[in-house]
Length: 149
Image (cartoon, rainbow, N blue to C red; front, side):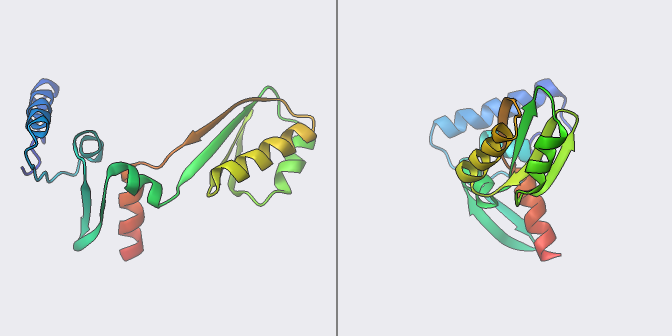
């Protein structure tokens, strides 16, 4: 199927997706060509990303984890200078501070997040939440396209 939901109104697109999912339940093989990565992620068991040639294949989950592009977001009750100084001593990639939140790239989730939370607490900071935002298929696609450009 080539772009089966392109240019369809939302109701028609949903009907087409449900039809494809029904075929999937019947164990039918479906080749789906789409630029809609969100749709591909919801429908497909296995995905191939093309850019002149086939660059990568895998399950949506495997592809998302392959680039290890996770971002940690830590929210504080209040960010003070002592906490900021402690954070700036850590080897964090792409550290961003926005109001009472910090964000940074994560490679080793357990080790890095624990180190950061420990540094914050030792500096007298109070952590409200720690969230990890994972990579999306769009992130994978853009990384692959940029690497081959």
